[in-house]
Length: 606
Image (cartoon, rainbow, N blue to C red; front, side):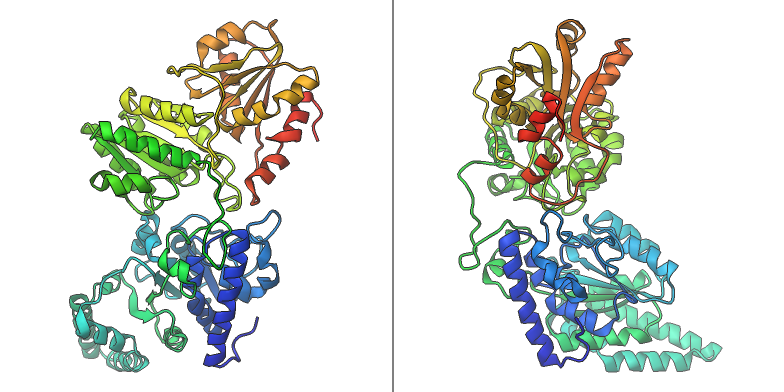
């Protein structure tokens, strides 16, 4: 879409058309609405001034890149976004030459942008990141490293909620406007160029720059960027296209890395998103007229966790809840409302969240850290260095474990069994139902002397119509059968129980076991029921996770260690990244539910 010949009024009309398009698509597909509605004018201005893909535009996280996709030839396919085989939910180089780096997790754009800028010093590299991403540790590391080194980088901070530094009164506002004006910057450039022609002039120019920095810092905290070697501009009204265009065009005269601070309204143009920014940040399909999401009466595992944690917190004042910018998503909103003095949202800072929990635990508190599986990956070192080595009793709720669905390959939570099970001192669990989750949470808080992970899927909480007790390290035999034993972890217990009747119809009556404890394995059960080779002709493991280093692999390793050469049929996720689609679609495709799972067990792979 060529927008460079449009007038300012026509650009505003285009922005309204884009907003309507995005609202319509997200209402049907779900997705990230508020963040995209807030950057419509900014994105239009970027594509008006710069020439993508020759000028390289990077989006941190990428959930705010829908407009970028529309303006770079993907408008007709926008209705496929987040669907199986459709547009990726985030930026992805495999999709378009206008996407230069993968963007799914926050914080990678500055580091990647610096690398791209150094490799292409004759190109403009524009990095757009949200204010929340700026607090991410990776972003701060990148800012410190970039400093004044990269001459061709433009960093745009989209400030839509958390100010980078509040303006101080009318004087500050006027000063910021003046320091962001074209006249000011042209004058500054011309005067400095003239002065630096001589030795004395250089000294005067340096003094003037130090004075300018001092005045900026006194009146506006954004000057912190100047002290780190950046040329700071802002705050700019992110919905004023003319102002944005002027500031972006003016960057040609600046020969040092630039930070442009843009103020936007998250959810702009859709009243429900403006009123409830967090709800509409990432949302399921909804009714445009009412803003309501269609939702059944059943509770998710996240909601079950949040309710149970509140009950336990009533009894134990040492319980503390920690999350990383996902209060609602992890089911903690009620806890945060009721126990605000024991609630911590640390922002997009998973490493900090884990180490912070360690500090609490070592002084007798009971921290419960709830983070999505895909984001907990970012805190792998603290899990080892700060929690496991000290054997601290921190409870980790590994939310969205397994197939997440529409958010695609950057968000599928399929690696946590592998990356946590390999850490000494960790107990790794996978509840199969609502009851399991409640009991494991209570046990972990009251009894555990070391770290525990409890993985829960993105699914409605399941109920098993059986009565049993939970003991540490013990599996639960749900059905006693013959010839075949199926050891299922977590969500896969539901899937195998739902096809049990089909297996019986085909003459297979398996023993079905809920392997609620992944680490440690139930060595006693293994000795009694699996080591005896004549008891079962087939042994099958089921897991909603990557097979390499997973539950089935752990069982194989153990049997090998005790010198038993046994064939274990492992069913899980192969050595591939899983792209987007509805969770049930993906589970079907990879053979983890329904008819395809039945066929695999019967030996008729499709």
